[in-house]
Length: 136
Image 1 (cartoon, rainbow, N blue to C red):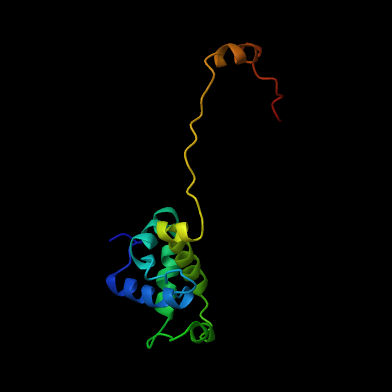
Image 2: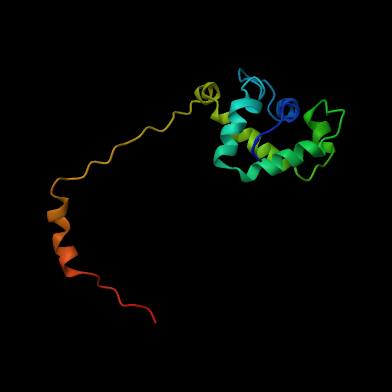
């Protein structure tokens, strides 16, 4: 297990807490329905491994019994819930179903096409050499 991987118990707790942050509403799935606590939190950690400790600490701060509502979670004034909320939100919008429901279109790859005469075009610049003055 790497530092970014959550245990089964942490994932279960994350699902419950994530649903407090993002409940099902207005045709949108809840965070747990969007699998935030499964593959998408792992994807967040793959690009932001620095959030893993904050999420783990944020989950550890939430003592049992778990809050039954967001106001109850907020009333606990947990200092490390920010990283948890940031990671949950990022994981939520990584879900393709959620992205489609909010109208987010995945960016496509735009190939860069170089002109065949690029070498000829920059040959005078290359021949001239650098024109900067070295700093002292």
